[in-house]
Image (cartoon, rainbow, N blue to C red; front, side):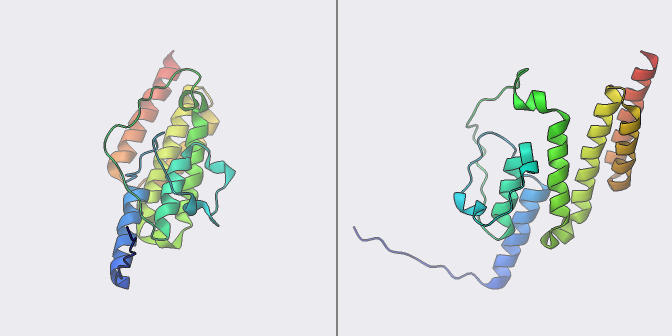
Length: 180
């Protein structure tokens, strides 16, 4: 049987529409979940920046690398794995390091000029991460460090729901630590 190759020519404006939609889907909506069942083409790493600091956010970074230059990225909603976090797992043991990895990725995304239309959403996501880190440090009675991170979080958050949620959680954690 003879193989045939078909080339489909897509107008440039359609490619740009796809690229914008794919970037929003992967970077903002995070439709490629950070799970152990993610599969990526080796070609997206060729010549790409892959800093060691990506850490536990490797699949988020790889999904971004796949779509930033217009390559395809797909999500399969079927459950393909079973997963549980146990005491020795990376999810359980890395704690705040996972948050730091995510902060690093968000900062890298903010530097990408292709993502300018989504900077407000990325900044809000970065604020949420700083807020989670602040709560982590408050719970461990590292109040100075938590306060610095909380200030960073509030300076980045731009959705009232996120601001109120973080404020309420911070008050609850601080009151709990003060009175116990």
